[in-house]
Image (cartoon, rainbow over all chains, first blue to last red):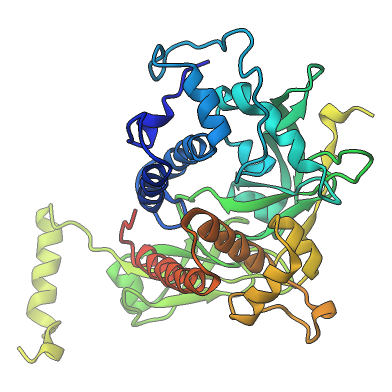
Length: 310
Length: 106
């Protein structure tokens, strides 16, 4: 596993005081907090910072970490020295076992046995949370989704190690972004005969090349030829459940929305599909096409800037 | 039972209020009193009149967990976190409108 330089991650010296560490953490947390930051990789950076802070803000963990000394560099292959942290007992810090699941192998190897203490005071195992990304099509047809989770487990030596497990989850038809699927008993195991926590999966959609999603409604930008928009036409349009024929009213302009009732995400009620009309001009590349545009210019007496008074 | 291939079916937490006060508190790793405070400052709006009848939706769960993170990571008071939540909500709406207008916002 890779060595983590927690001082470097928090951008402080090894001699930094508790206050220095706190203010460095606050500053970086503001920059990378996934709820407020739009920085690239904010979530991953924030986890690293949180992990570093978890160690350095705790005098016991920091002292144990400092014992490793200056010998290691960030990213270097690391194995903990024998008798690691003998004489230290880690008390549960700010992070719950659930948060610590996002921490590195390096962290869980060094400090993994801390979370044993925290579980015993609760009446249930902790509830866990994860986001899953599904295809929009899954909301139309339902499907199954496989998710791989890392969760802390106590091994034979009494240490907490991160273990991977795969779950196959039924995605119900009609699910929408922001909804959660609650899996009873799939959270943290209960200790001493207590019931296990639940697992909440927050639903997110992969962005779709055609459809924009707003709640249960979808919208689709639908290109039209000028004559289809002007004269009206019956044209084909894709929907998530198949191609349909749509009647375009005469005199339609770009931006006009046509609502296909019930063609959005299924449910009670089903959502709607909005077709946002977009008039596209044929290129005037051939002489014939240019001729037609010239004819329109000559015979239509059309001033598109009438409303601007020019 | 073959756990490897078992397909789990969960319950959906959506727009209908389904989570009771204790369930929401547990899902946030928090105490029920903290949820009551969030309702008092108007961050959460449960269905149901009396506390035992309160039922929370998916949006409440997302929002409460956001407040929990903001409080934990910035030492924010509930009131300050409430303001942050409102502003973040407005930003989300503006981004959604920009995206609808075909503008790249990220």
